[in-house]
Amino acid sequence: MARKLAVFNMKGGVGKSTTTYNLAAGLVKFYQQRVLLIDIDPQGNSAAALGIPIWQLKTQLKDVLQRQITLKATIISTPSGVDVVPSNILLAEEEIPISGLPGRELLLRKAIASIEDQYDFILIDCPPNVGVFAVNALMSAEQVIIPVDMSYLGLLGIQGIERALSLVREHLDHPIEIAGALATRYDKRNNLSREVLSSLQEHFGDRMFATLIPETVKLREAPSHKQSIFDYDPNGSGAKAYQSLVNEVMAR
View 1 (cartoon, one colour):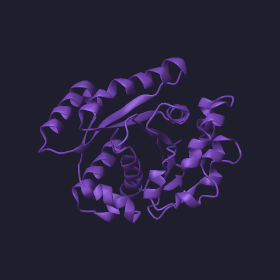
View 2 (cartoon, helix red, strand yellow):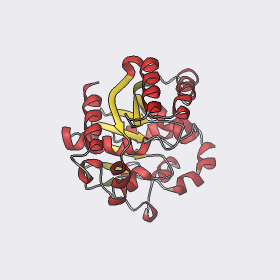
View 3 (cartoon, helix red, strand yellow):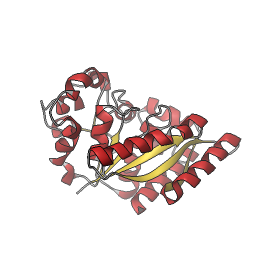
View 4 (tube, one colour):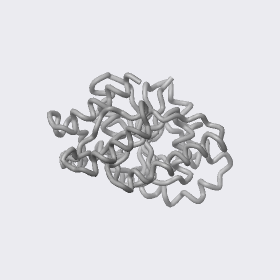
C-alpha cells in the first residue's frame, strides 16, 4: 500500500512544485522507492520539470477526473525514475464541469485505488487554492507537507491552510494529518528569514521538518534543464537540502 502525501499551500511561489518533484526524484535515487507523482496543479510545473512536454499530452489527469480513462492510462515514466500523471491548463478549463460531478471530492481517490499497490509513495502536487482539485488531492492523501517561504505573507497564510485542513477533517470526514511544515527559500543572512523560521518552529513544534531549503538560483534553473536538483547540481546546497528532506520523510 502506497504512502500518499499531498504537497499543499494556498500561496504561490513557496516551492511547492519544486519540493514535490525533487522529493519524488530523491525517494527513487536514494531509497529505490517506487514513486508516482500526480500533478493536479493545472500549471503542470512538476511534470514539466521532470521532462514531460505538457503541451503535447494526448491524455492527462482531466480525462481521469471526467471518468473517460483510467489513471494508469495517463502515467508517463521519466528519466528520473519517477512515474508521473501530468496536467496542463486544460485541467483548469474543466474545473466547473468536474465540480458538478457526483462524488466530486472523491474522484482522484477512487482513481488511485486501482494502482496504489504498485507504488511505495504517491506524491500529489496541489494547486495554490482550495478548489475542487485541491480538495481531491487532500481527500486522496493520508498526510500533507506544507512548504512555507520565509516571508511575512507566507507566515500569515498558515491559519488559512490549517482552516482548509480542518474543513476536510470535519465536513468531509477525512482524517488527514500534517506530515510536516517545510521552510523554503531560506536565507540565513536575512533577518526576516530567521524570524519567520523561529515563528514556524514555535507554531509547529515537532511537526516542523528540520531541513531548511535554501534560496538558491540552482533550484530555479534545474527545471529548464528538465532535471531534478540531484542531477543538475548534485553537490550544491539545494541538492543537499532536498536529500535531507528525503531522509526525514523516510524516517517519519
